[in-house]
Image (tube, rainbow, N blue to C red; front, side, top):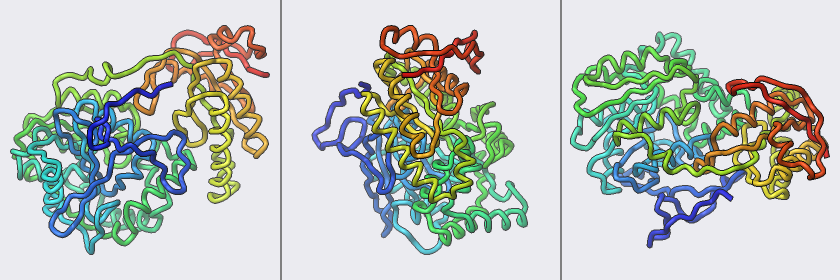
Length: 472
């Protein structure tokens, strides 16, 4: 329903930079298939540096990663691909794994900022880029600053997200040593999600997924080495030498890099533009209010921020949100392994039910799913079927539905109708399917039954909403 045609280039890659292949990470059951950009390699001396290119815009934009990354598995994390695809609507976006991590060559020790600059230059040369905008994230901002100051002729714009200038300022040596040992001890269990992506931290499946990302990105020993080297980073002295337009973005409640470090960083850069976001505590740039941030980035680079709005497709759809009741308590009682197996069974059942009712499974939300339907009757019947099937495996769910206009954002969706469906679900009880009045009006005569549940205020939405419990 939502797939748009793409023009193909002669080399077999579509014009957004995607290979014609379906991506399925071994052992992961994706809720929506999508196509990944091809992973390629640039030679930096004797070391192969993995990179991906997405989009064909007139501006080259390089995403410089934080302290760990894994090019391909990052696409499994909620929101990452949508964020990059939005950037690719106006730029040729380049992503890479620094040496020693992810899909790049492993090595003994940790690379200095100078060596990392060589790797970035090798990637730019490999793709034929003479000048690019750099988007440095977290620790990656320090290397971006150094590269921009050293090679100003190759950097058109510098954007720093959740960054700092001197790592040692973030804690005392004693507190840092304790923190280091805790990170290494729990590496691979997904514990860093609590400060990097706290909005996802309450979802056991998201924690398990983040743990796999950690394990694939780096080993514990290599992590210890890179963190010790990063502790010594200090680019404060070169901030006044930056000559290109620079944008510093920071979330006020960032739990990983407190906002005062973003303010201090911006205060030392001549002519900087500083934007502080008042909401959200995620350090991960691809989570939270990404539309505002993406608009700020696009406007800074291109002078306008309406490219993404022009690209959006709007359609009428019925949106379904589901959620496993008391999932956190159940996960704690069962243990991680049993819970993840049961969650996998849940995901498979939901996939089958959505497919059977001709729906589009948009994404998982950790303990539930978001799906869309072009018929409200099928959407309600699908929700009832999901409740019946998952109850048989001991996982009661609740569901909420609303029909309205939605925005198609790549593999994701947005718009007031999406928020409304989520709010409707929040009032649903265990084994209950709640719908808005719009849904009941549209399915009149379809043989479905509805019981009034009352009038409610839905957070963030105007007026009061009449809600109804559906039954077959």
